[in-house]
Each structure stands twice: as structure tokens, then as C-alpha cells.
Image (cartoon, rainbow, N blue to C red):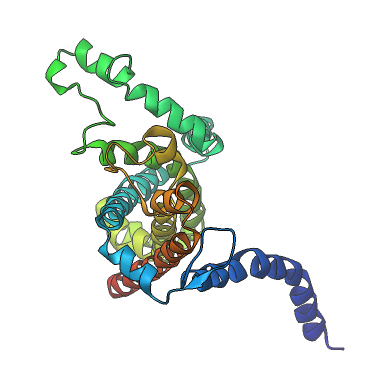
Amino acid sequence: MPASLRSRSFVIMALLPALLIFIVFAIIPIFWSAYYGFFEWKGLGAAKLIGLDNYRMILEDPVFWRALKNNLILIVSAIIGQVSIALLLSLLLLKNTMFNRLMRSAVFLPMVLSTVVVGLIWGYIYHPQIGLLNQLLETLGLESWTRSWLDDPKINMFAVSIPINWANIGPYLIIFIAALQNISTEINDASKIDGAIGWKKLCFVTLPMIWGTVVVTIVLCISGSLKAFDHVIVMTRGGPAQSTELLATYMYNNTFTVYRYGYGSAVSTMIILISAVLIGLNHIITKRRG
């Protein structure tokens, strides 16, 4: 047997167990959930076929559209607050010094923490009476700025997005540092000779060289924001008055609170479709940019 064929066979055999696990626990449940989206089912007993009625009810429910709007806010804030900050920090912390290694660890630390812990920490920070944020504003003489950060429908979604972004900057920082380190020294030297320094180097040399990585991180932001759940459940449970409801919490509440498993399956299918549409739009936009 040729060496190339043996190598290909080894790769296939090595990947086969992980591929089978992925198919069984990820791909098949997606299609199974999409199937139950056409039924009225409470999780027990017989399922009643109702066709597209679940999807019609979803599109007619104002709570669904509010959850979608909140998810879009979360996506925009993630791209600005996670990708942009991670890219900036990666440029500042690129050199492998002791201080930079400590700073990288500090930025990555929130990712290691449980999302429940992160939600509890920020819940106390935002607390209207004993919260650190309001106390800090009062100390600075800005009492008029104090408020119930998680109770005000005008700002609570933005308040919720901050801890989510804070907790997810670390992985993107590592990704960007790895991408920047893969830029050859010859390219950096040539850019200096040509006078590309500072912002010119960033815009015309660095970003084009790592643009593929930027696109991947944006895709990860979109998918991560659409499945955001833990932080919101801990801090607000989607309230007050469903003002911080997300698609994932909307699906959870309909599935496990009121036992509409068929409806919840339809919502999960809608999340997948919305994710596919947004990722497709991202591909079109970033392809033109690239």
C-alpha cells in the first residue's frame, strides 16, 4: 500500500470516532428537533401533527421578535466588544514578556470561571443598593447616573452584554496572538522599509494578513451570541417583563416551563436558520471587504 494511502487511511480512522460522536450527539438531534417542530407535543403522550402552526405562532409572538432584537444587540456588542478589544489587546500584548504573559492570563481568566459565577458577580456589581457600580458613581459625585441597571428596559440589555463580552474576550485574544505570530518577519521588515508603520501597517499589512482569522472570530461571535443563555438566566431570567429575553431563554421557557416541546423544537430550528442567515450575510460582507 502506498505511503500516501496509508496516511490518508490513518487520518480517516483517527477522525472516525469523533465524527460518529458528533453525528450522534449534534447532527441527529438537530434533525430530530426540526421533526418535532411540526408537532404539538408536551413531552409525554402522543404527538399531534400540526404542520407549520408552531412556526406561524412563533412569527406572530411579539416576545419572539423582542428576543431576536436582543440577540442582534448582543451580536453587535460582541463584535465590537469582543473582537475589537481582543484584536487591540493582541497587538499590545504580542511580545512575549513576563508582563504580557501575566496580562494575557488575566484577560483569559474570566473564560475559566463558571458562567454562573460570572453572572452572580456582575449581578452584585449592578445591584441598585449595594452594587459596586452605583457606589462608585456616588463616590465620584455622579449620583444622577445611578440606577437599577438590570431593571431599566432602556439599558438592561446593554448592561447584560458587558459581562458576556468580558467573559469571552480571552479566547479571541489567544486566537489573534497566534495569527499575528504567524506573520513572517520578512513581511514585517519589508513593510518597515516601505514606510508602513503604525496605522498604515495595521490597515494595509497586518489586517489583510489575518483577515481570515477575523472572519472566523466574527462567525464565532454570531454563533456564541445566538446561544447565549447562562448569564441572562442568572442575572435577569429574561426579565423584567421579558425585556432581556433571548432566543435561547425563549426556547427554554416555552419548552421546560410550560412544556410545549413541539413549540420549543420549532424555536430551536428557527435559531439555527437565523444563525445560518447571519453567518451567510457575514460571509458576503467580509468577502467583499477581503
